[in-house]
Length: 150
Image (cartoon, rainbow, N blue to C red):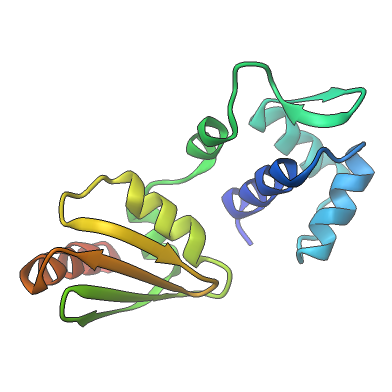
């Protein structure tokens, strides 16, 4: 699993509650399938700008979770190239198949592109559904995403 995926998992854990210490954070990550060394976890905490308070790890003052997510999410082009397996058109819809566990970060990065054709995006574990205005927009969007795969 990539660094960005791991760091996004840390951010989601913080949104659910504040782990008391690095060991609690490491155990929570292990439950999600991330085997992380203490040095790596310390580096992630520092890079994400997290601070430890009496209540556990939290976002630094003035650094909302959404901003932290933007800081660690790689470009859409890179995530598409790395994780997208297939793009299928279904009229005004795109069904994008990804590696297991990769749909949400890929969808977030695609949403970050703010393409005018996209009306909405839904991501599961390994599938993304993108809704466009019409069939022509879906085809244009599919072509754009497939270019990143090449």
